[in-house]
Every structure is written in C-alpha cells, then in structure tokens.
Length: 165
Image 1 (cartoon, rainbow, N blue to C red):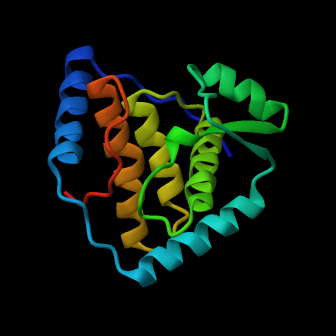
Image 2 (tube, rainbow, N blue to C red):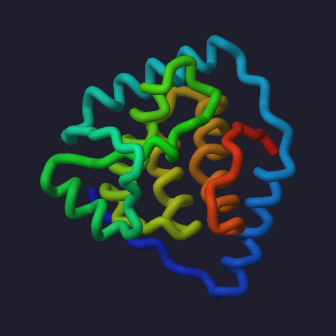
C-alpha cells in the first residue's frame, strides 16, 4: 500500500471550507440513527479494534498536539486516547468511542496525514472504504470531517453530536 500526503489548498480556500463544514455541524440538528445501524457500527468498530497492532491507553489529559508525537508513539506500539475525543452519545457504551478514536488515529498514521481539514478528509476517505454501509459512512463523516471542521473553526471541541447535512 502506498502512503500519500494530502495536497494543501490555498489558505483562503481552506479557511472557507472549514467555515462551511463547521456551520453544517454546528447548525445541524442531531440525526436520528436506527438501533440496527448503531449495532452494525459497534460490530464494525470491534472488528477494527481486534486488528489494531497497538496498545490503546486511556487518558483524561493526554492529547497529541502534532502527528509526529502520535506517530512516534504508534511506532512504539502504543497510542494515548484522550477522554475528550470520544464523548459522542451515538455509542451505547463509551468503549466504542474509545475504539473509534484509536482506529481513526491509526488511520492518520497509515495515510501519513495531519490534523488539518485535508488530513481529516483523507483519513475519513481511508476509513470509509472499509465500513459496511452508507449509513456508517455518514456517521463517520460527521464524527471525523464535520466535527474536526468545527474544532478548527472554534479553536476548541464543539458539543458532540451526529449530523446528516
């Protein structure tokens, strides 16, 4: 598998795209997700978790500021997962949010992408190819792309929710 780096757009275009996607997230109504879809998402996450070659470690305070820090830990076989990264109410149990964040961060490593919007989109695209349904792709788009855009726009985490714009 070839690793690719995302091509950054102009700063103005990137800023406009961040703002547009952030507004979709911030102004969107929480989606209603069928229980069957949530069960399918959780099953898929557990399968992904079992394939991770990492020891995920919970932390109340540890958050990676750069991908280089995260990649260095991944290369040592472990990954810190911050509690404030996975507080979405979509999951029936917090462990699934923990797993989601670990899988997502590992996808950043596999795609050699950063925490910019372009990096989040590339990581999302890599993940979306593996999920079992369009409904799960939509959930992940909200979690990865839209929520990240809101974070970049606001400068802090937005109230977690799943939106289907």
